[in-house]
Length: 198
Length: 198
Image 1: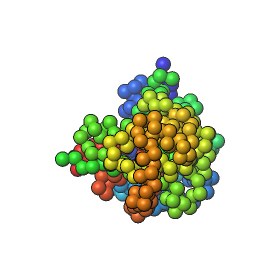
Image 2: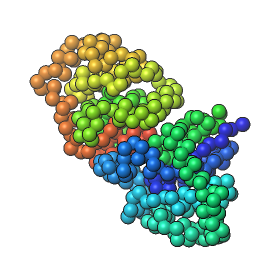
Image 3: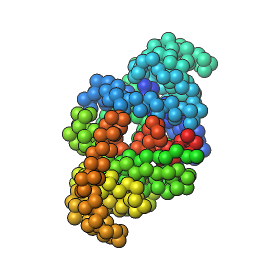
Image 4: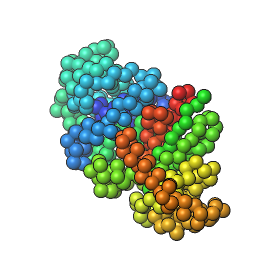
């Protein structure tokens, strides 16, 4: 019996884009239950003393990341357009995803937001863009956004982020199988194999 | 006709260990010429404002790296013993490797130094340890060390490090095919494929 794999990601994170487009299919093929865990990297980077993405703070590292993303999106056949703003505030889509992580459409929504950010250079920080993405998936956008903002569910994103801080996440994407952490887009296969045999 | 692949590494670097144990076989199987390029990360980290490995400066990131190394060495069947000192000064073995990068035995020497550091917890900063490693490979250790310290060849390591700074390397290991950089142990297959088709 495979263990569930928790996928911890931030909509602003470039390498989360590569991973998020592949993880649901990999888990399904391996019979591993997938649990979506959106969180915010901003508070974690702040704890590490950074006031921005380290890709912006370290120019050499940042230049390499953008080139790497060109190669990786080509390798996996993913849409790619370097965003005109990076990182984008991801609170609006993350709140929707965190409040609906168990819905069957959540994977489609998550992937559509990442494609909007990194394939189409759309401003996912804008609630109107999030609304449009939901509608384009033929989902009841008003109802979903209202539920994400409700007193009952609004705190889920904060709860995820607080948990990530306590556990000690330091970046994204992450696969977590019980206490076993796999960080980075290149670890997906190893993480899924771990969940299968654990 | 495949392009040469330059493999830029530091003997102190944990992820260089994983990569160095695999790269020669991967290149040989693909018909890609391999060029060894030892260099020192210390001056590059200093330029980034670090006075130590970022794995020591960022505890969460460091803890993850050590766990990751356990898993990766198990995955690839490599000897593993967490070194009692990290990072170790790598100048002594790097000077030998840089001065002899075109010798047919250089790959064997490089791998033996990495196994000493990360598989046997031996102090590779100690010239006597480097001497022992050469002798254990049935090589003329005195002659080799003398050549590495000679006026003619002693500067090769510094020249490599200066080149790495000018090019903009920011970590290790790296595969470089002309100007195309692949950083990290997980990029070896992509780098070799790039060299094959370039």
